[in-house]
Image (cartoon, rainbow over all chains, first blue to last red; front, side, top):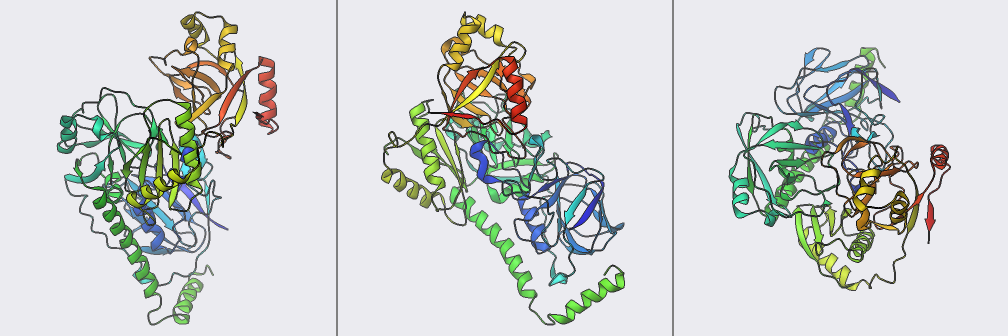
Length: 341
Length: 239
C-alpha cells in the first residue's frame, strides 16, 4: 500500500463515495458525494469502479503529495488545480510521480470539487459497505473526520492508464456564467398542504442559496413562503427534498441529511438537476420549474446514459491501433526515465 | 393483509406508501412488517424508511419505476397474510438512572403531572414502548406513548447540548439521545449503555421493536457503564 500525504487540508475535505443508502431505516444518513455526477465522472476518468472513493473538498482544495506513481483527475467546481505548480485542466487525467504535489487556488465559482486516484481510489476500510464520511457522527471515511495536515491516505500504485490521451471530458458549463438558473422539480408529498397562492409563489419566486449551506442541506433566501397551518407527522427524507420550515424558508436536503423530517416537503429537485443545483453560487438566482415524474425520470436516464457512453468510449479506444505491448513498454520506459521504477 | 393506503411519488427514485395520518401502534407495526417484507424482495428496492404513518421506499431507477413498483407492492400486500398473529414482539430492556444530575427536567415534569418521583419512575418504566421510527441520528428511537401525567411538551428553548444517553419525553413521545446533540426534549434520566458507536453504527434495536426501561441506582449506572465499555454488557431481551 502506498500513500498520499496531506500537506494542507483545504476546506471540509473528506473521503466520499456513493454513500450508504441501505441503513436509513436505522437513522444512519446516506452521506457520500454532494455532487454525485462530478464524483462519478472523476472515477470514470481514472478507470475506477463506481464504488471507489474520491476526495471531496469545498471551495478550496487540499495540498497533496504523492508517494508513488499514479494517475489523477479533478472534477466538479472551478477549483484551479496545479501539479508541481503548473496549472492543469479539470475533467482530464494526469500522471503524477512520487514526490508530485497537487495543489489548488480557491474556486472562482461553484462549491464542491473531487479528486480521483487510479487503481481503486482511496483505500480506507469500508464501513457498512461504504467509505463515505459523516463528520457530524464521526462515521466512516478517514477516522470519521475531515482530513488534516499530516494525514497519510492509502492508495495503490498505478503504472499504466489505457487510452490515456482520450481521458478528457469536455463539459459545457453554461450555468456558471448565467445569472438565473432553472432548476426542475416534481411536486413533493406535501404539495397539496400548501395553498394555491403558496404553490404559485414557489414557482414564480427567485431564490438564492444562503450562507447556511453545507453537506446536510442548503437553506434558501427569498420571499418568505406561507406555511401550512396543520402540523404533520415526521416521515422519511429523500435527496433533493425541499422542506419549508416554520419561518417560511426553504431548505434543500442533501447528502448528510437526517433520515426523517417533520417539515412539509413542497417539492423534490429532480435528480438530473441536483449536480447543477449543488454547485450554484450564492449570487445566482434560482427559479424552480415544475415537471412531470415522467420527464424527471427520462432526464435521469439520459444523464446516466451520457456517463455510460463516455465510459464505453474509453473502453473502445483501448483497443484501437496501436495497442498492447508498444504502449505498455512506452509507459514503463517513462517510469525508468523518471527514476522511480 | 388488508389496509387503507395510497402511493405518493417523492422523487424519480422514491415513493411513499401513505397510511392514515395517526399515531397508532397497530398501523405502525404493519408498516414495519411491510418494510421487512419489501426488503426481502428482488424488485429493485434500495432502502426503506418506516415512519409513523408512512413507508418511504427508495428504488433503483435502472431496474424499476413508480408505476411498476407500485403494482408489485400492491400485489404483495394483497397476497400477504394478516400480520397480527404472525408477528412476535421484540422487547428490549434498557437500564435508566432517573436522577436530577442526569435528568435536569425531572422537577418540572413532577410539577407538571403533580406526581411524586416514585410515581414518575413507575409510570415511565411500566409498559414497553413501541419504536415507531428511527431518525434524527442513528439509534434515536421515537417511541410512544407515555402516560398523560408525564407527557410534558418540549422546551421552548432547546438545549445546545444534550448529553449522550439522555432519556427524555416530548409530549406523548419518549426517546434516548445516542450522541451529544442539541435538543428540546425533557430529560428524565440517563442510560449507561452506549447507544451509538461509530465503529458499529447499526443501532442495538430496530424500528418496530419495543423498549422497556428499568430503573437503576447511580452505583449500577457506573457499574453497567464500565461493563458496557469493555463490550461485556448485553441488552436483555424480554418475552
